[in-house]
Image (tube, rainbow, N blue to C red; front, top):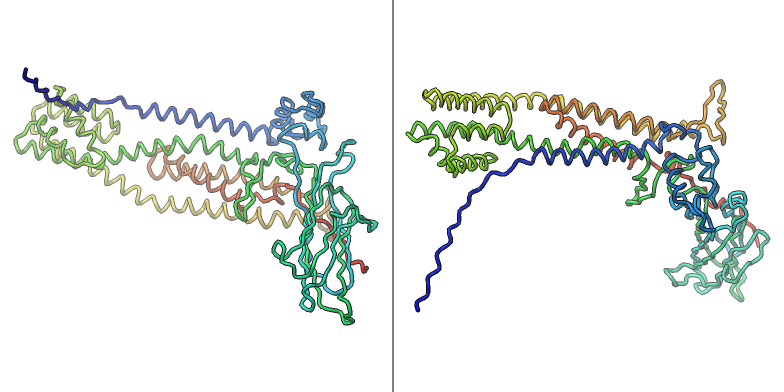
Length: 534
């Protein structure tokens, strides 16, 4: 029995037209980004002084609300009392803050490093202060564990194996434990040539660092001996990691090389909110418009070729199908779609109307309506096509000329904004700290200098005002630049988003430094003046 031959499969690529989901995507992007932007603005508002009651509250509204819902005391009881009263101005102490996870504190380094090494064979000692929490902050609770580290390096060119002892003692000179002492040999290579002391559980108070060189036997002349050291104490200050000394939200610290950033500081959410609401949708819609403009650029060439085919005796139907294999850049897909629609039996006039609806620009609609009316009238369509092509090309030339002419004005807008931003950054970084440092009083009283009074100022207040001002300037300047360039609001919001992003980056990398946003500054271990001879 003979095998039946398989019939060859017939593959037909219909390239059916798909629904245009451009607007749907635009609405989706706009909806999602607006929601995210409003959430950012809500977070900013609930942490800012614009929120009613934040001026009188011990903690911002957001922090108070979050901690009232999540705080648990040491016995597991929810909603400790201090957070119920925080909105009335009761300031939670360290023990209270530890019940809420976003208000917990962690130790920060306090460092004492000798400006120059100690030298000489006589024993020396120097007192220093280990900071920490006060009893009123602890409310009878045990002080959290603090650690102290001493790294040192002893050198002697005369006697490389000379011994020495270094120790940390209490204020009376007593040695609390043998682990608080290190006995070593000069020029020792252990751990890179450094001695180490690690102390766990050191309490706030006065201590002293003591070094005792060991005289070599039989030596009467003082040998060479130098001792270099660094003392680091990991201490608590009672201020939550995510808050500054004004109880304002600054968020976790992120270290990028030499930069110490607080990317979630509440001020950033003001910029994040507007950026999310205007930039993503503007970028998407501007890209859509650029694609449409790219099709408009090739549209006159398509009309010109269509006229040439008509002059050659071909009908519009055959002409469009022949041009489907030509190269028109961004217009290729639309020409192929028109060819397929004609092959399905759709009239040429209807195909052009569908094409004009898909592109949706006045230039294309104007040219298509002109061609359709000429086709209905039965005139010389080739001349109408050439005229429509010339008209479209002239309009595109005028648009490009407008963009070239206005580009210098856009550059002026950008340069003026950059100069304004630079001036504000310099004021924030140089002028405001100088004014704030001219009054070092602990209260809000004024310092008298001759006949001039200098009031104590909060640098963060001026940073806040500057940041709001530059952000609003970015939105206004960017919108104007885009509207002047293309006449499209989306292009303006794209420029505004870029200016706003530049503002956020400059403030975060240059201006939002710990001393200006109110992060507690470690004053070190405050070593005493002079050394004690042993």
